[in-house]
Amino acid sequence: MEDAISLNVVSGGISFIGSAVGLWLANALVSIA
Image (cartoon, rainbow, N blue to C red):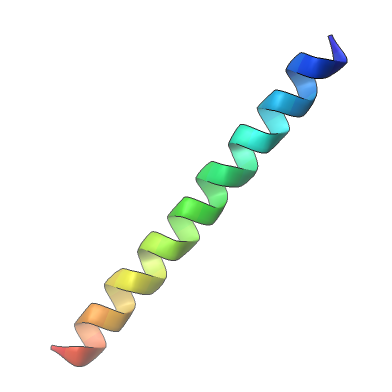
């Protein structure tokens, strides 16, 4: 059960980081344009 919880936390962290990077990239592209 602990493995499932840790896996869920890791996947959540990855998706959060991916969203943050995506927003940062979009903001950078808009600033350039």
